[in-house]
Length: 243
Image 1 (spheres, helix red, strand yellow):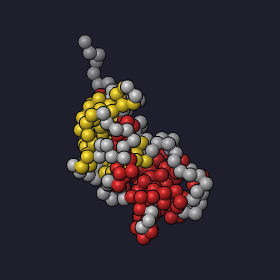
Image 2: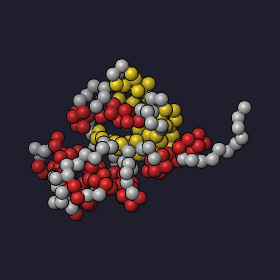
Image 3: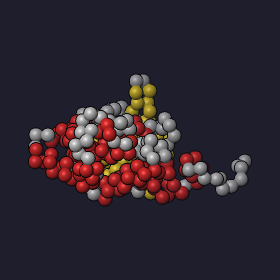
Image 4: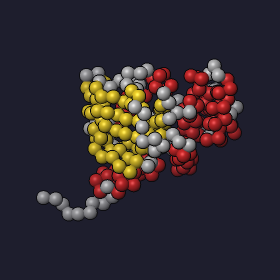
């Protein structure tokens, strides 16, 4: 269980998160939605150790993560795939993926086994292993970026805007990969600006606004909520004007 317990965090003198309570059960896909500035990406930064909470705590299976370095949080099995394109274009696809296993680089047998497991989930990694990563399309790069994050066999995979800039075919491929990761037993936490896509990928949803969690539930229930439909999905209002 990944837990955020009353997390307050921010940058400089200002708070972005104002007491966030959030739970992600094992082997679920949770999508965090909300307007720009709601604090969605800041939640990922706090969990990954890139930003320390001012108060509150992050825990994984009861063990505190707050205050640990990003490297130690990786060792605990929490991986974040960033929104920005993060591949080295002149390096081969295989070399890019192997960089995700730098914490286990001294164990060559384990490194090879993890690469083989990633190739099963992301066949592109095997099929085009020797090609420069710069040859890939946007959707293919996203697949390889996610594959690199799987090299440590994480318990929790965090994805920041996985659909950003993808055409429908690439989006379908990334969605299928997220489902395979989920079925393999990992917990997936994703932030997605495209609410329809995000909730379609998820088992559970979280709505944030103003640095606070406003609504949680199963993804289908969140998508069906009248306020969510009106604000994010373009659904028509169902009643007359209020007083």
